[in-house]
Length: 340
Length: 251
Image 1 (cartoon, each protein chain N blue to C red):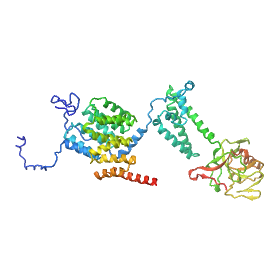
Image 2: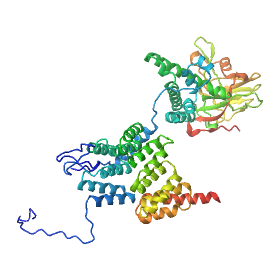
Image 3: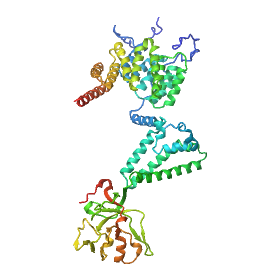
Image 4: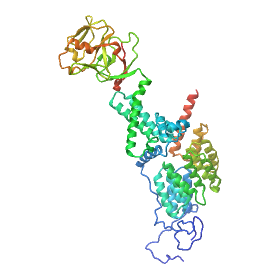
């Protein structure tokens, strides 16, 4: 019996070659010679699996960073890894380990863009939260987490990193674009196609004269009455509308604002419902504006008087934070507000 | 004397006539057919012919390797791995089978397994060209600069199989984006196999990628040899489109 593979002459009756172990004699009927085949419908699933496997992050070891000795003495590898991961994947990138991080980085960028696009809506905040989560995940994955001994320390670290990154996320835009703000509109102004609840972007830097004209939508921190009759300033900014300018005589007649005896267009200057029953007439003091908004006055529990409205609606120029320039959310209404 | 000559049948069985020119359909015949179909880029028919080879003689090792390779070419990597395992039961620790299994793993995006099988195959005696080619593929996947040396090594020890190995090497290099190196090999291959649609197709694709004007003629030659080949038609259409766009931008 001669082996097909190594040509070694074996003893008759031998099933496998003594030299190389190859099969010497195989009956065609005893062995299946037709290979298994893949069903066509499996192809896309297999391709997808392969794609996922190709992009799979393979955790290998901690990043070994090269930095000066004096810095090494002050900070650990983990801390610097975390610091470099302020841009997710940066630490990996400088170590030529981009392959490990690319999907995380893509997901982070995708979420960040979605968050920006949907900013002002619940979905936008969820995207932002997920982006922070991925960011924190990347930061701790190769940095701190492996050095920690037990689960409690790991959980504590993850929470700490999450909080730190949330803090960074919260304040970075304010540092990079200090004048950009935003708030929900408390009014429906048909003229500007703004409805109550829309998220508007507003720009600070209102030092220039004439920037705030009648009808401008502005970001304010409205005051509210407490149950003891005190006035407190809300921490959250809302968008209201400037109705009266300094020195003007303002009057409310049912559904209309009247300035110096002249009735204003109700589409452009709508009277909020809570003011419609009020009998208000006053002169706006210097360096102040009459700002119409949906204020919380229910806590007061007494009939609205002129002095109350005066306290709530007449706002000093310095208390107006920003002027709204763009509807950001909902998406279908996104666009600049054109003041004419 | 034939031992069945004394048996009586109700009717005499008609004897099958064989014309003078008809080849004997033995294992060698089907093996050559398989190679022919492979060179034509018809991996499905090549696979069937390798199965026919094994129907004739299941100990022919090349047919087992051929089956696994055709499964890999058809993109059925899991099946290729299963079949390589089955072949390894018959031919234990055979370096070539380990190498093709490494290729299947590599293309199925299992780099760790691929390198393990490739390491195993390379550690055996009597390493063939295909083992070095598999090594080259695994290393190219890991972007190792040593990979091209493995290709050279595979070709240098190929002997009579050099044109086939060169074609395989060129296909590997094309997949990994080394078009000019692939063209060098393919120019030699088309001289040896002028009727191989696969060789012309591969050459055409490389030329197209490098923006060479011969690409269209080469792909047309491939389609002349195998007119029903959709992949070549698509490549030719893409080549035409590219030429149109490049003309447009040159204006």
